[in-house]
Length: 158
Image (tube, rainbow, N blue to C red; front, side):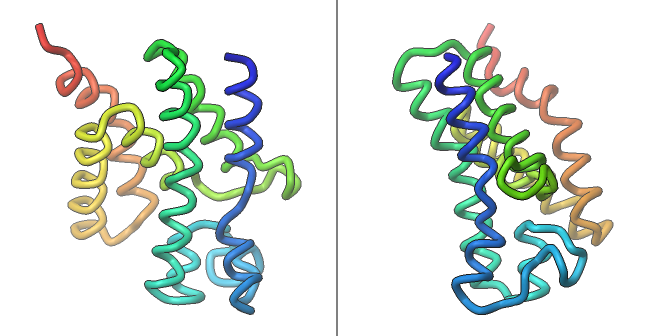
């Protein structure tokens, strides 16, 4: 499990927003817009297609370690800790002075890796709140704070 924790943290620390913007010749997301290296800020800087790539790659940073650890038979608790490690890598990346993004896409990817329907529920709640409130961070906080509740109901089969 320790190997998974370390690997997921280092994978989470890779900023797809910074790398993709650099490859495409776009401004560094840490110096433009909201100054946050995440998909929402890249949407402002580079548009929908570029933001979609960042969203996908950030989601994979959460999903890949969880799915790989699941393949090796780790428990749900261990998978959740591995997701937390990838999330913390994104938020506090070792490669970028421990100043990263908000971790929403990485968290979502990990949730999808844990349980597709939990990830889908997170996405639906995020979309509804974002549409009504029009603030991505409030939508993310709402969906995240509610996630233990819907995780319980979706995964409990008693």
